[in-house]
Amino acid sequence: MFSKYNFGVIRGLRKRQGLTLERLAFMAGVTYPTVASVETGKSLPSMKTLDAIAGVLELSASDLLGLAERRLVQVRRAQPVDKSKSKFRQTGLENLKVARFDKGKLIRVRAKSGEKVHVMELHEDCHEMCYVISGSVSLRLEGEDYTLNQDDTILFDGVLDHAYSMIESGEFITVHIPKDIKTIEALLATIEKA
Image (cartoon, rainbow, N blue to C red; front, side, top):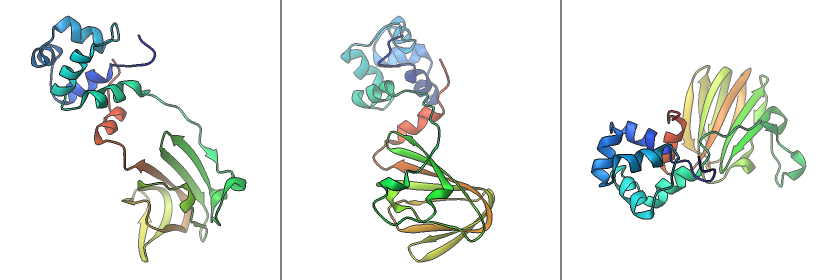
C-alpha cells in the first residue's frame, strides 16, 4: 500500500452509490483489474484513470485525490485548553478538553450546575453541533435561550455569539465542523474498511 494515498476510499464511495467494481470499471471506461488494483492500493491511478473514476463517483479528480490523501483514521487525545494562550477573556476553560482534527474540533464539557462556558476564541468559521450526554444545559444564542436535556442535540452557525450554562450538572459534547469542508468528506466516517 502506498503511504501517501489511500484509494480504498473508492470502495466506500462506490458502495454508497450501489456500484460493483465491475460496473464502476465499465462506467469509467477502464478495466476491472485497473480499478481493483487502485482500490486495493496495489497501484496508483494515472490522471486519466483518476479523472474517469472520479467522474463516475460524481467528484472532481482533485476531490477524489484529496479524499485519498486524508488519513481515514485519526486518533487524538482530548487536551485541556492552555489558558495562557488565550487572547480574550473566556469563561469555563477549566471545564473542557479539546481534540483537534485538521480544522475541526471535538470539545467535551463537564460542568456543575450554575457554571458557564463562553469560549468564542476556539471558533473559526464553523458549524457547531452540541449533544447533551447528561444533565441539562441552557444555550444562549444571539439573545435567544434554548434548553437542552439529556440526548438533545442542536446545530447552529458557530460564529454566532453563544454561551452554555449548566442548569443541572452534567456533560455535553460540541463538534466544530469547518464550513469549507465538502459534504463528501463526511462519508469518511462511514466508509467500510477494505
